[in-house]
Length: 326
Image (cartoon, rainbow, N blue to C red; front, side, top):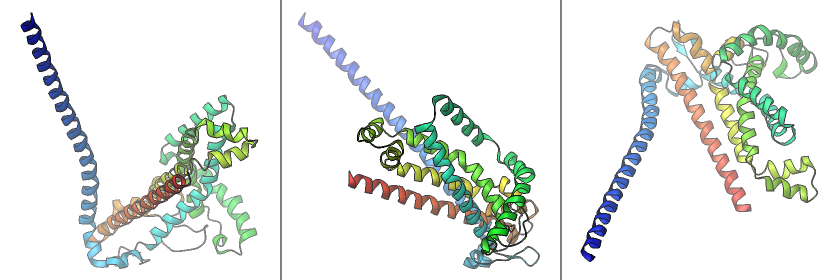
């Protein structure tokens, strides 16, 4: 009897050992597989940068760092510079964020904190639908609807009342930095609103209840209990919208006017890095011309990388300060 029990225990021990080996083997396979996927993502990014550098090398060798500060773009004489495109990219993105951020945060706060349930569901659905509209459709709408409206009455009114400022001088073309900024605001608005809504919704309910129990009004509760708690998430939402604005191509190309010059006036036509690449790459001939366009892509990549690094540092700093206060 004891011998039978001993054999049963030995068999059970063997089975447990084999099961443990299979589990460890499965864990090892899963760990290596996920590591491979992570390396694939990194490899794609590194390969992209290497390929862009190889294609841009003729322009890099010819112009060097001067490419970033040169204002000319002349395919005939093969003189190229990126400064007007960089300026147009940053200016149009800044206009877009200046318009979109207050509207997005206000809409997100309303949907989470103030709206009835039926408006909350319908509003969230419409915001997500706006984010799904292709950029070329928004660009066509901007060209035929927004640009005439920007030309008259917006630019005419701004020129008549604020024309003493350099930002609002010149004839009202309609096509230009202002129209491009408004288009970008429309495109990033659903992204910032949706992310801000989710971040605000994640604030614990006891934060709100504690503030209201102390006698705070609804606005004081939002300002002192909700927004400080999710501040880092809101910054992340804004930076994500900025990343979309920096790289937007088709819609901006249709309404910005595609003039390669530095100007302070928001009424003037201009260009962004993405619109310049999209507008001229199909017609580019010669290693220097093609290399200059590819180098523009590298500049846009670097600008986006810097923006994301700064955003990470801001979020980290805000999180660290909030943790220290707690």
